[in-house]
Image 1 (tube, rainbow, N blue to C red):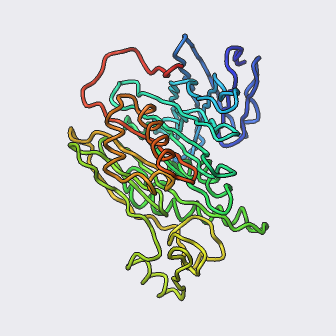
Image 2: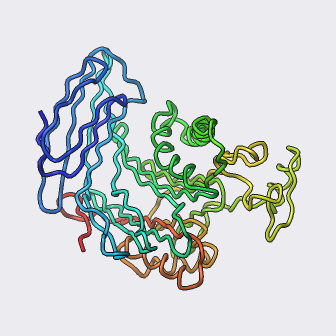
Image 3: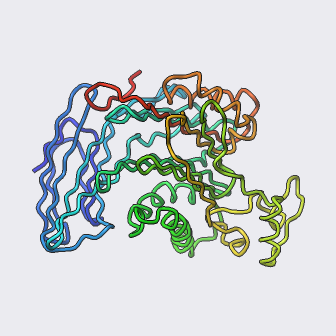
Length: 398
């Protein structure tokens, strides 16, 4: 029996078959396999922790066994475009999978930010988070801006594998609709964590996961008449290694010893290597207000875009960076920011704010003030190289 009277929302999934929602109590059932589950919790004013122990007996769960725990305490602002932030700051989840004679400790994939959308009239949504050991913090800000609809999505997830902390950050900018971007938010990092070579060959795992998720989306949309697509700018931190993978024109920039260093290059049709690849595949790049593939799409790589798939691939370019004492912060953002804010300005502006949430909000506000007419979404990640004291993770509260 679960006692969840103090929680707004809990979703538990093991093998995709358990869901518990509501504000009262609930029972875990229909696991589809013989499993014993113990869920204990405690909550304080600004902290929450969840521990889940799963014993699958002799059943091999493999690298794909995932438990998600999503907690939502505070809803988005309902005052017609007001600032929205807060929510549960800590999600501590541990999963022990016993398979035969071997025991594997694998942390669940946990969302550390609540999935708030920007306000209906174009207002901002933002939130911040800090790791339990105080070594890393992040924040996001998202703004519909002048567009009639919101096609930007973001994702931030944490996990632990063999005592290694894994952090995943993603910006997904949709075009022609929001379905592709939302699909990436829902599936990309989950697929990545299930890749059997994620720890042994992270770059290969990322590349294959991008292509698999693209194929999955196209299959899911095969019976529709839609042909939307999405960019993806992702950063995956495994220990002290950072892997940045990019498809499209969203971008990742880091600050290292005060210098702005781009870790992705926009996939534009007029890039000489991209134009050569497209034309070698039988495509054409032409000018239609800007350079476009087939006179239609203003980027040369993307998820989705079925009609142009032969030329517009979802194969990422990946860069690896060591996180050392000179590494200060990372900015991931959609082109609604980068169209009007140069890399150096973004790093300079973000560096003036101690809290990443405030930095992300300053960047989106600056982009809008400079005339951006697109959706604007960004994530700022800051590394704190000296360990900070303090009990656990806390949410920034209004």
